[in-house]
Image 1: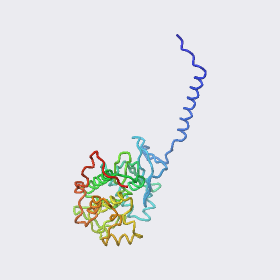
Image 2: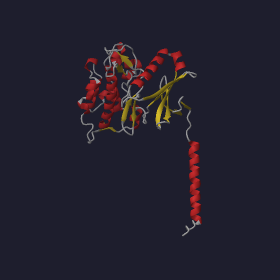
Image 3: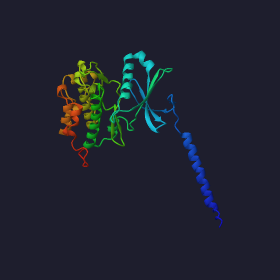
Image 4: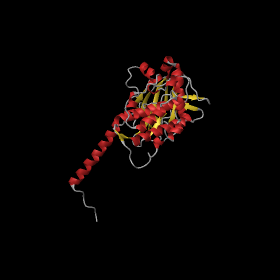
Length: 317
């Protein structure tokens, strides 16, 4: 029995639908974002969108065509940087070497590095966290439970423990909420920006003054310190995570911050904390160097008890 003919109206609808689908495909093709450049192998592409930038590098949104995942394309003008600050070039190379040697769930992963000699640009591809820095994320999401905050804090510690127990020991030296990153859909935390990190010998002692003033331990200014400076910075990170305020926001200058830190004046935000458990934990982290727990010891702290339970804890607001 021959098929019945398609009614004229239905045929017209099908034709219109097909035409619309063709138009949609053509529009998607024309709107497709083009790469600004690709790496020498053709695997990685760089888009124009900037994810962030610092004093020495700019980070772009990139794409790994082989794996089908988004990445961070880090781009540094080495030639100009070498003329202005040769030591910074050494620190940048140190970051790349560190990233290549470190493999941990809570440290930004490294994919590839190459030097564009013609343009004097060092490029390196790293893992990207889809929600940006913890500082920006916390600013966007003002109502966070203590339970969630403790989960973030524990992950940062796990990353620090990996650095501090690495052989040789690695001191981050610039830990703050702008270089701790988060995947907001999973709550996974990763430590990044290892450009100021120091590899130290068996004495675990370093001698260079570097870091972000609001997060720098007082002994950093004496030029003799150990990995416990990262624990101090970590405590200040937890304080910022809780209050959404930079430590020492009450200070009007870097000199005033320096005077308060070296004089033992605690940040005003600490006195505003109503939760005694949170305040006590932070105070242990930012205490005198000889009294600061290690990352490993802090991971066993009662502060983290129960955070994997199903029940919720109080909400910060």
